[in-house]
Length: 275
Image 1 (cartoon, helix red, strand yellow):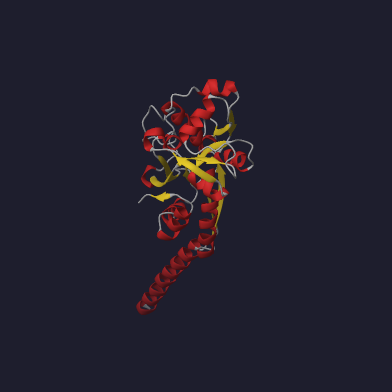
Image 2: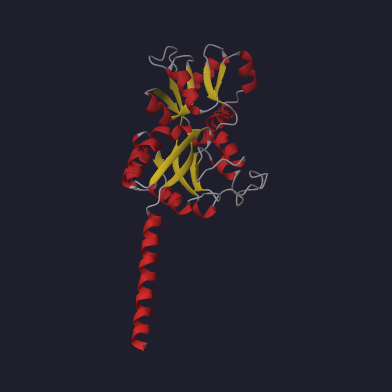
């Protein structure tokens, strides 16, 4: 009887171990949806990267929400489901990160898993013109002269959009008064960088301040790029959010965005990968 009891115990333990292994495998293969909120300027690259990632990981579905970083930040703050946030500027990420400067995160928001936060990419703020460059604008200095004599129309992002905030820094660098320019009727606005890019592509304006990557994707001519002194560096931070329903899978995709495979796609449109 003792031998039978011992054999039964062994069989029970083996069954438990096999059941545990099977449970782990099933869990690994369960369908998972990762929701990624990303700056509009990343639309083309992330869709391409996401497609290949889902082919290699068939149990993962990537759902992207592209918009201005300010709009995405507000949606996250209001409770939207989001696993990963990628901003076109540090400000919007800092406003959600409890470890950031309190002068930026004024509301003490705590949405970011600080242990996952990285600086993913760098972009350039570009002055782009429509096909043929009708007003012969070849530099930021030409833009400034045209704004001052009211001979050109410039498209820029709203003040709550990173590309608009970079534009405001460029205005400050050249000692331009945005309110006066707006009153003079030489400015138009877009709620995100894609809207500004469209205005330039359709020749609704004489030039626009966008990102180099958006100009590349739209086939626009870049006549100048802003220096660090003009508007600072354009850094794209990324992080998994504390409210993620699938933090491990979200972290895995965030890690993938730092691979050479993903890097080649980012760099093909003008991003600089930060390691």
